[in-house]
Image (cartoon, rainbow, N blue to C red; front, side):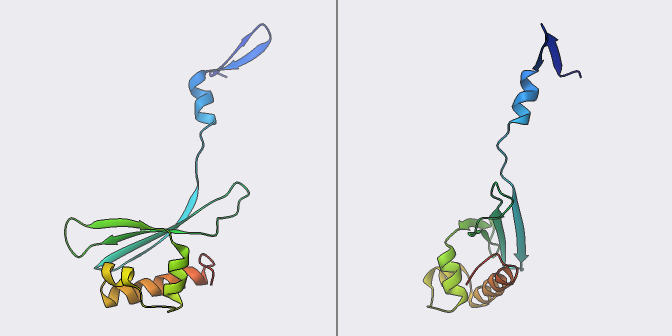
Length: 119
């Protein structure tokens, strides 16, 4: 093999190759829902045991004005309470129009049906 060398019966690997093999890469799954006004991109991170963490992260993009504004939401308690209509939410209402909040709730329901968001 061209990336290895044997010296006195011991095999050595080139430093660049060894570094590439030991990368700490995080894998994830994603789902995106987009309208003319908004985009929601949900991700969940894969754990070491081939299962996913319970919490999700949502990148929210407001496309109503240029330049577009993006932020990340990671409060899963907030997602669940919004989905269950537990309370009127100022954050959702200040970030999105009424139609956008309804679209976001539909997206959360879809994530819940996929098993990404637990009630």
